[in-house]
Length: 284
Image (cartoon, rainbow, N blue to C red):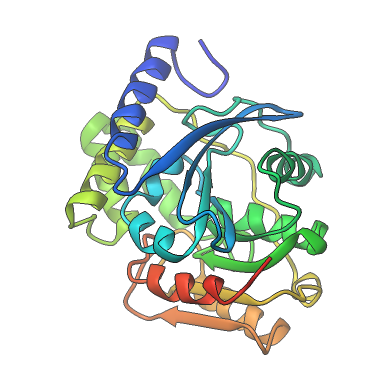
């Protein structure tokens, strides 16, 4: 038994599928293990060496492979460092410090130092968006710009779907597929997103997700963000009230580029080109 998996065999199965998915990475990439105070941190680095550096953080249950459908767009004009977060599936240490503690900011200090980046832009989705936002508030001098895709910790968390997820979990693979379809708003369609979706289903057969409540960042704290900010939100997100998030962000950051897609859910399509253009215009 491991800390974040239901069994050692399950952990091995997830990592085997993860490696197979990484082998489908569509652009040249370097795989690195970075030394941090929490332990080894796995990263996949893509894009031109002289392009603006970006640290990309996925959400709960995610890995660097979850950027696979969009990495060709992002890495065309950005130097993307896709990082597996601690306590999530992938090849990073299984430690899970409390979310409200300074531990994740300290971990990201070490990530940037290991990458020899005094400063970088941050791209985060879902819980990864919360980590990026938390770091920007704690270390504004090290964050050149902030791009968030359906971030957690701003809008209200929806609780009703959690009851359905708990019910569906009683029905094995069928239940996991139902839960994923709810979150995805019908499920991924193109081959890259289908592959990531299947990997997510296989992961949650063995993975134990976080149960900790994600701290909410109040409007007063959001006003402290001074770097350029772009945020993409799906109004039909079943996990988070992103209309609430959009209202809070617009109130706190009138100069931020806040985009609310009325017909999109938690797995938000079509954001990568806009984020690439935005971050390409920011030099660390």
